[in-house]
Amino acid sequence: MDTNLRVNAKRLSNKISELAKIGALPGGGVSRLALTFDDQQGRNLVLNWMKELGLSITIDGIGNVVATKKGKYNMPPVMMGSHIDTVTVAGPYDGCLGVLAGLEVIETLNELNIETDMPLAVAFFTNEEGSRFQPDMMGSLVYTGELPLKKALATFGIYKSNVEDSLNRIGYNGSAPCGTPNVAAFFELHIEQGPVLEREGYTIGVVESVQGISWTEITLEGKSCHAGYYPMDLRNDAGFVCGQITQYARIIAKEIGGNQVATVGHIEYHPNLVNVAPDKVVMTVDMRNPNEEELQEAENKLDSYLVKVCRDEGIKLSTKKLARFQPTFFNKEKVNLVEEKAKELGYKSRRLHSTAGHDAQILSKVCPTAMIFIPCVDGISHNINEYAYEQDIEAGANVLLNVVLESAKVKSSDLQEMSV
Ligand code: HGY
Ligand code: MN
Ligand code: MN
Image 1 (spheres, rainbow, N blue to C red):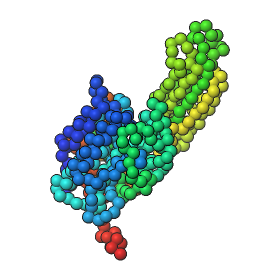
Image 2: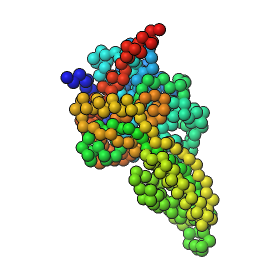
Image 3: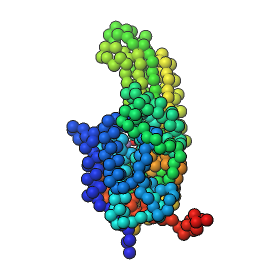
Image 4: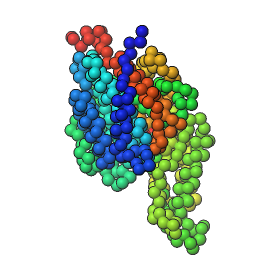
């Protein structure tokens, strides 16, 4: 007999659409870059929903918000969460689904008057995307103590303001301590952001791991010159080298093959004028691979190529690692629980690794962690046409609800231990 509980999918979908109105783009999609006023408005809305659910709320020094529902016993909570900051061409689901599904779980339990043994918490972490301030997963890195708060606050972003000023400006520089995580287990529901589940007809993705990530910022300094007359063989054209690197990123992915991916996503030319060969270019290369050795091979290929092309063109090279995460493997027992609950609930599921970075990969360092994926149409994300069907959202939230209920039970053996 299936004793699993179910969420109210309509209520969850309404919240997702409500939140997506904040930072809505004229042609569709959402833009709520971390620590902007749109992010502030999104935070305020979610905070209101947390208060309406009677949750006790803490905000820490990097702006992470944790909302807790009391349990029978006063002990670390089972936490659900993700992020509500977005890229500038986002859809309504990336990150927000995990946070709002967490609130839906709480609301369902409140309605049924269910108090779990262990407390439950719903969190959103600051600047998961890392688009404005690097590295990505900045808030959860500070929450778990992996990134010192001071260092994060001093980070300058692509708009030349730093995290501290931006956080103060939106009023989310909280007082709760950072770096002393208080979590019994962590679960993150997320859209797959890839085509596998949809293409193969699965409803639930049982995520076993997250691939390694390497973000490099490259600064190329040459000499500007008149685009018209200066002899080609005398030029130190930073733009030309930028083009070579952009193409070579794709060659690295092809040469290494397998799951290797690479892209140049950000380029700033100076002076960025039609008739001046650029004297300075700042660009980024994002490379990822579930296999750490292959990712290191990709980094080595890039590094030696940079030295060669800069020497050939007489360009001064400097590089900075913006983010570097090794492949992360989730807690086997929690991964099995996700698979078991998906099966009990009658959802077709398969195991897979995550190609995108997530807060869960950071929380997995401090507590047993697992992720639940649902399909997104054509696998697209970081794109205004990102879309997930309501029945898949419902399935993902139902699995989250029942996985968390199971995880929040205190075994009698633990009780004896606690009572001594
Ligand atoms: O880049 C990522 O994988 C994530 O969206 N921050
Ligand atoms: Mn995300
Ligand atoms: Mn994202």
